Length: 503
Image (cartoon, rainbow, N blue to C red; front, side, top):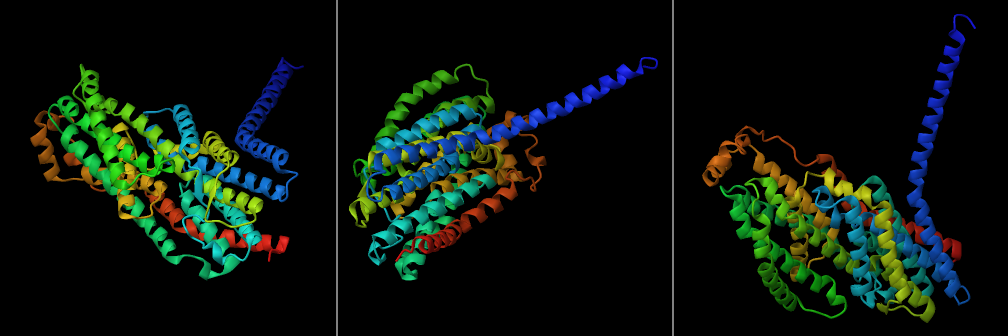
């Protein structure tokens, strides 16, 4: 030791070593957290295999049933991870719900929708894409549906990793089409049906965007740009809530309850009208009471939309569980029916255990992998608040009703994301430099125009409120979903055919 320097050197070396150990521990913890979700997903699939093996292991074709159940569970996990984000993403992005609250509400409502309104009978050929009479035999049909499930699940998994919300319905449709072509040729595919699905790539987002923009325009004109915002809100917010309740009542009758009891569109509209009248009668005094003492500013208005938005997120999740669970369990139910009964059928009864796989898989997928897409849908495309998110929710319900009336095939994913784009692009247009809009604001709210809206004329028309990278990436993912899942499915079917010598 010289002049006490040795202890200092030792101390510095020890500090560096401890810092390295700390960084290694932090890296290990980060890696471990990244493996938690895949680990639980693996345990979920392992549980399906173990329970399935116990129930069907000794039966003829029991191993194939167990394998199909695991693949169906994997598909359900991916639906939960990707598709459910469209239902709760706007509520989370607007801060009306926390991520935890959104996941809890969506998981409960998705499961309830799947189990209560998912239906006892489902189309097994995914909306008539393949005519079962063109399939050579039961064995070919089973492997065709296996390939479709695997390819759709893999494609949705990849899209989720890349942060792209895609249509799970289009994924399974592409899977069935690709495997059907590989198994029975191009003539086995119903091309008019496929043309309608291709048209929905454009129709769904455009309709959703236009309706969402129109609702936001009404809110701005009728409530936000008024001298007395609170008085305007007391008049119009109950009406908007009634419209939302009526739209969701009709939506649920068409997409959810109709699984239990068949309800025509006119009757569904009457149900929606009755619900709307009841909702207005209930919410009118509630909004008046809630708005008492509120300041005359936009932040106060946003508070009035929070609970309607939460309610709409729950209803969208319920309807989604009732409708889109078929994307996971429809092919699985078809495989089980073909293996157990030795025949191919257009429509089959869904066993309770198959429905449980779909419901639980969607919920687990949402909880384990959903936050990434929820943040992307809610935060990354454009900035949302409760009023804008409300426009998205209402547009989703109204667009489905209009599409059902017109007989158009639409995607709930495309509608919801298109509505978010519509809100963002409308805001870009509305905030662009325009003396006409400044004059309108001043006319409706002279005092507000001199303060809150004084900067409107100075805003540049080039201001971007929608992230362009998401427009191109999401549109590309939508366009290639059917071709990509179809190509992957065809390759998987041909591989299975070679491995198992399918005739």
